[in-house]
Length: 112
Image 1 (tube, rainbow, N blue to C red):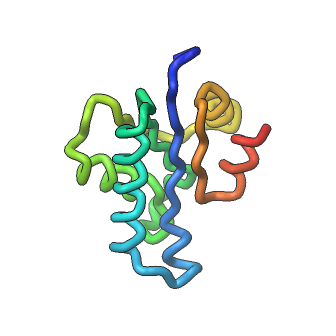
Image 2: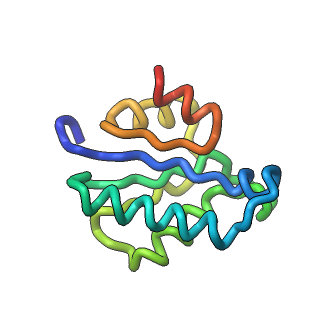
């Protein structure tokens, strides 16, 4: 929504898979991040999975859903479901005041 203090968070399961990081600690850090965003005046946080595919080990949508579940599915947190094309992805990101991206292409979209 135009003019609102909205944040987009683009989580990545790839960080743990390729960076050999602890997946549970990573999820907890993302949950804490969203909680802090909401506590510091962000009106809405939208979790956008950048990669959605059949391989569970590379499916960011499962991580986004887990973050929302652990937060208790609050009204101020949304999860984008389904596969977005590049224009849809960039349009959503462009409307956010803050972009926190763990995937390179999502970070580039936030900068552009």
